[in-house]
Image 1 (cartoon, rainbow, N blue to C red):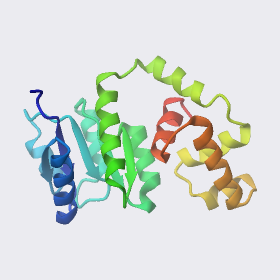
Image 2: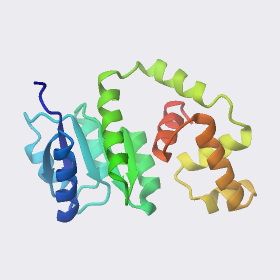
Image 3: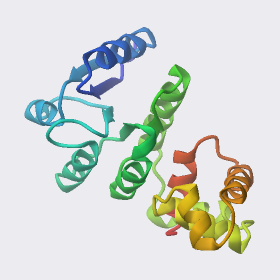
Amino acid sequence: MTARRTILVIDDDPAMRDSLAFLLDVNGFAVTTYETATDFLDHLAGSRVDCIVSDIRMPGMSGLELVRKLKADAVACPVILMTGHGDVALAVEAMKAGAVDFIEKPFEDEALLRAIGEALQTQSTAPADGTAKSEAEARLVDLSPRERDVLRGLVAGKINKVIAHDLGISPRTVEVYRANLMAKTNVRSMSELMRIAIAAGL
């Protein structure tokens, strides 16, 4: 029997920790939970972790700071961030710093399980940097100049209204461009779109 993959959950909300621990346990993962990023870092040495699922806003060290700390310490473990609607700009910043994904609360169980599955798969088959960049650029090749402008605004963490103002178009038009971006790049989530854009160097 293969060893269960270990998922680590960091969230200062006890109810959230419990529900995620239950969800992951029934789906065959070994789970450890921590209230803060600092608690986790205190126990990190020598412990096996396959994937970290962390809230982005926590007392003390934030999810973004955790991603930077792990990268600085050369800890090669994929980090998925859970983010509130207003934290998307922060989450994008965290992806630039090295997080593999973010999911917006409230989310469906399947969304988290899919993100974890993809993070574990990516970890074991990570392409070389040059390959990742060329693959990402290929996914963006069909975008119009205006669609690229909207995508750059999203990568900068701007909301639709700000992107619309910057480009001199209506927020509704920005929504249409966002839908086009998702369709043309064949992605299922905003985080996947951000991952491609960041890999392509936008």
